Length: 233
Image (tube, rainbow, N blue to C red):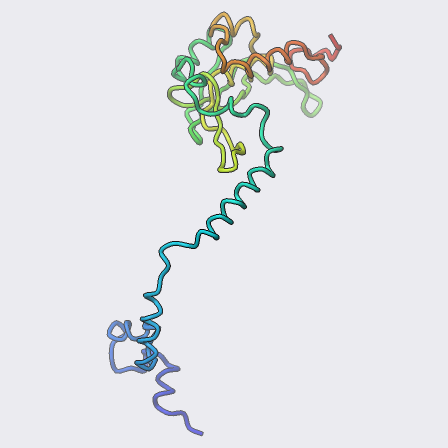
């Protein structure tokens, strides 16, 4: 059975049309093309039926499910995590990152990287250390510590929380967090940090002082950078 002219044109597309493609674009993209008029009117009428709000039962169920989810994830929260919210107490003494670098340089040579990622600049300190690689003793002079908040730094770090009050990630990195990292890695002593930056004070300093206490009273073993001999003290 020979193909009709109309069917052939449909298969070949606009190339078989006497009109230019841009003249038939609207027709080709029309989803209601070829639909009877009474069906077009029915579709138009149905499209106007919209609900502006759901039922009170559905809202109650959503709230109920959200409360249940929040209750179930309580075990994944940090201990006393309300202390890690962005409050004036955690802002504390604001310090510019370059001021922090200058103060730290009075204890140990250091520099901040010019590369900034997610608002943080890499901090490196100078402390020659010997290590063995391929049977040869080499010296590593500069050591990466951690990222430092660019611009003005809060004293203590704070976190982001989701709608279930679970911790997500760091919102602001405080300069006390960087100091704690330096102390734990053995580049700075607690006494040096207190002398240059001042002792930690106030309610927001509890976690900082708690971690320093644990670090101060730890058993020092081989993996401890401050005690490379490996003897337990």
